[in-house]
Image 1 (tube, rainbow, N blue to C red):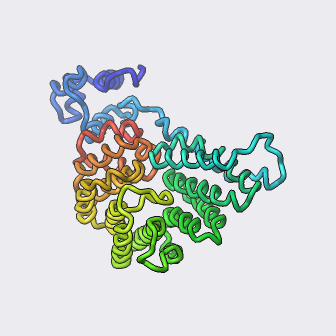
Image 2 (cartoon, rainbow, N blue to C red):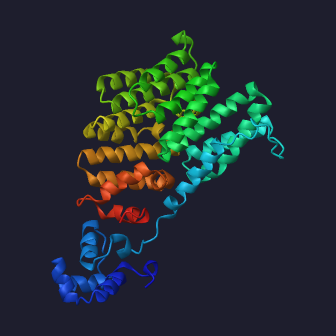
Image 3 (tube, rainbow, N blue to C red):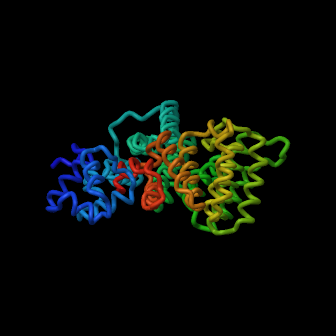
Length: 395
């Protein structure tokens, strides 16, 4: 039997016969009627509800993946380890420092800047597989540029490591992400703008480390304008983004008062910037801060607050101006909020919307797969989540 080529009803019939069960005995074990079994096997009645799929698989003594014709590991997960290995290898390459010739012409400064811009765009559009292809070569080029001219090449090094750290956080590669963020911080030393940008990614990496809040605050106050009346949108964006990171670290630690206070400060700064901007690759503005409040509420276990704020912010024009990656990540946080309130329908709706606008955000992030899996195992979950769970190999 070629499982992928057969409809699920035909697979049920094949597996039932292989188990030497009549339609009646199969129906009896399921607590269903013979007519119900017949309609399922003929494809007249769709077999969609996850709880029923599991019951059928249990009676047939197969796992749900076999029943659904999904024995193979999803391609997204099958290539993940290879992708991470390529990035790890690029981070471990020091040919120029060892004086080894590469035999290749070095990128010009302008061309390298364009390549970095293209890579950032891939990240913000949640095209993670494409970014995985770009990063190893890009890291090599920024290393070479830095050796050629350490001062002129420093900004490129910081940007490349920031981007690498951001992607590795998505891939749940904490140790490797920390290495990239730490290198960005080291390269940025002495330049308060570069340091603030690097610290934003460091905050993403160290979300679970309560002491990292003080690092975020120190970096924020270094970049904060001395005269608030003369602050630039670029300064407010970096400072505000760092305050949001500090707030999320506080929320993860259960400090709701600190989180609220920091987000209030960030809201004031966001008003100085407005929505629809992307200063220093932060996407900072009022909508970004409000999305941060949703994440903080989820981290604090306050589902009703997360859902209420989510349903408000997605109606803002500014939310639609956020990068695709940011919106999709927000929808995943919203799904977690809906689950906290016991609303699997709302959670499924948010996840399906995230998958529609940025499939890689759902299909390449281990943390998001866990949310889908949690929902897929909820007996109250709507059947609309089944195709997504199946495509991820979770059923």
